[in-house]
Length: 457
Ligand code: FRU
Image (cartoon, rainbow, N blue to C red):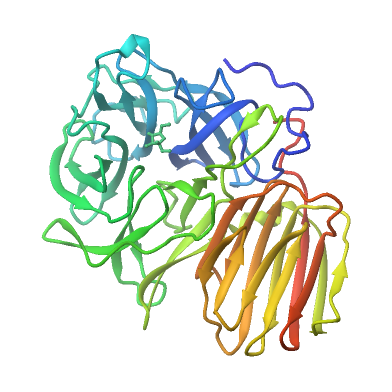
């Protein structure tokens, strides 16, 4: 059981107000993301006993809109096979595992039992295990036949399972070591066989794999991501995943890690929704450690640049909109900065700016500068830089600003920079300026955001 939350549990000075954090103690990777009957489930790596990493346990939170989260009791706790490392979840709609009771489909969690990371599991290897729920995700039991997959390579971990409709089989992506991953397949979720080895240059940990159709043509591809959000796009050829080239960068910011996407989003919705752990954030003096990114939707595009993914915040952010301020056609020169000081500090800001050649445009949100240089064609935020070539000289930016994080999306999510920040004392809510040429803010919209935490959480 979690300790009871004090009434003020979510209102500390450095507590993000629209990003998930645990009531207390450490979190890292999002785990076991699935949707079932109106509820988004998110498990997460959690140390229930400390502010730093350790005692890996699966914490559990639920939401009806990806914005308001309620933390439940911890679900998977360490046992003789090890502490509970990262993994995934699927709904077994067709009862392939034969574990279903009555009409409710079984929900299956796959996790790594990290043998040797606790006294109780000393001398045991890392193995892949399963837990399941026959009551729609309320309670979970560990499978009696664990482990399902014996050690393949030392440190192998982070199983991610997905249904392959064309192949009528389950696929499981597993991290091995170095930059090596393995794909396995199964028809019953219980017995797994090797499909292929995959090397993803510059990547390790937390694979995800899922089918995606391109935005326009509707053609189906498979996307594989690694912990750092880098991804490859490929196809299933004769039952094997084939891709070309090195992984592309999914996010250019300093704190974007252990990405995972939700399974079982209904076809009528059709979104591929991804979230990450904002690894490396700082929250001095806080009772929690670690926050999740704001969930985003992935889209697959195919154009002259090849096949690439965009990321864009889920539309449910509008559930937090408190007040809207808008500006149009504001001419900016180097000596006419405009400073706007709205009252609260959590924002969803959209900007469209005409940036003449040679100009440098800066928007500061809560005192954090985001800069576009039209000479180097780069977007910079939190000391990180993304390449960005403008279309018709127009920069479009979206910025989500929480108490201790900033998520910057350029050109409708073609690039993004995700990171943790600390508040800047006495910073104005928003300020905009331009040097090296007269920029024009064609439009700017700032939605103040309510807190996603309510006393009921
Ligand atoms: C990634 C990771 C995973 C592992 C988990 C342990 O951040 O190292 O590979 O399963 O964290 O907490």
